[in-house]
Length: 120
Image (cartoon, rainbow, N blue to C red):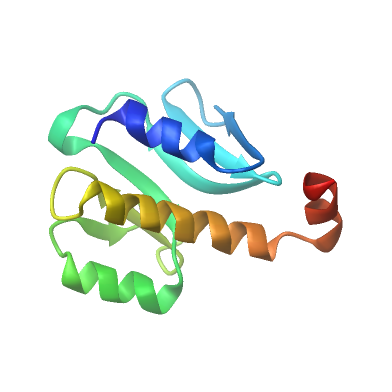
């Protein structure tokens, strides 16, 4: 997987905005103003990483099952966020599913008024 693939996948989700609130080196993907993924743009090859939100129990299971690939979220709440190395143990499809999971967690937690605005 390449950084462009991750960016394109995140941007393909409905109602997503891409921002650079932490400076020019970190892409932040938001839905309804809330972050669901962070991606450093200076990464290449085997060191490509993305931060995504995760159900706490699932986060622990993933870290155990993929000990060389999934870690507590770098600079994030370690209970709710994982950092995934994208070119190690996880397939592209598995990475996309975890991005979907993060997006879904954030979208479902949005206030009703924000969802209503997004959904029109």
